Amino acid sequence: MSPKKIDFLNILIGALALGVMFFIYFPMAIVVLYSFNPETVNAFPMRGFSLKWYETMAQNQSLLNSLKISGLIGIFGTLMALVIGTMGALAMNKFNFKLKRTFERIVLLPITLPGILTGVAMLSFFPLLGISISLKAVVIGHTTFLICLVVTQVYARLKRLDPYLEEAAADLGSTPWQTFWRVTLPNIKTAMIGSALLAFTLSLDEIPITFFLTAQDNTLPIEIYAMLRRGITPEVNAISTLIFVLSLVALVLSVKYGERETKIV
Image 1: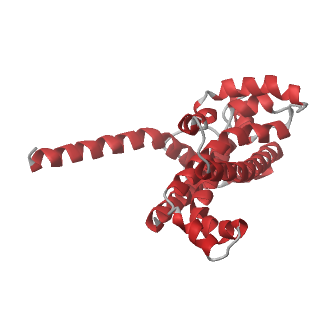
Image 2: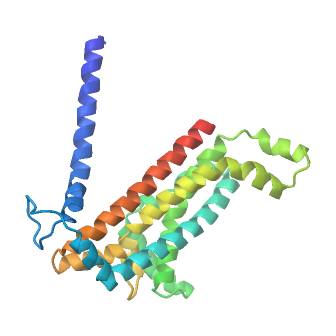
Image 3: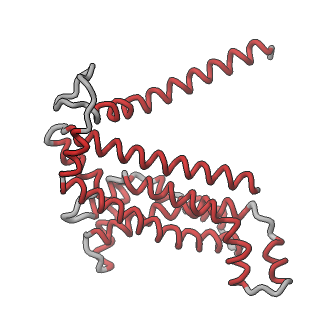
């Protein structure tokens, strides 16, 4: 293939990529823009800029309470997934067993299944375990699909580690626990941090599982959905902008740690 054709294909692929990015993120840019709209009705062009709706949002107790609930669910769900997922990845890396390859694919099932199916399944199964429909059930539900994110990223990192590092530590007199803290953990911490940030971001905007498992307390996505059913209110644009910025920061940090991990390897 001639250099001119290659350059044309690169330009075409770049233009298509920009078009896709524009299609995905332009609506979010409009939401961010309208969050500074001084008027109640969203209309363009706007007549100035104002922080009015951020002040209104700060006075909306139900919205702030739902944000607090979402944050707590995200933190506890992420911590539980981080602990369980890391232990699972360590076990998968250390032991060989039958159908291991099949298990490596099955572990992704919770995040590939439709959320509504997972929610209905948990709604039917949790009462059999004595777990009532509550925020506790929501945390457990979020943990189930967040675990697979941690397992896959930490396991991928472990597979790239030199298998002789642990043997060398043992030869130098380290116990298994000391080997984990001084050798294994420093080498997988970037993968753990990156997966935790990604898990927290996904937990913040999860709706189907939360819808089936929550009782009276709404998370932020469900609260916003309820508000939209009564008509769009401008403070929704403000809270959506804050969540967008928070999610963007978490994703950027996740990518940053992933790149650092690649450089280490």
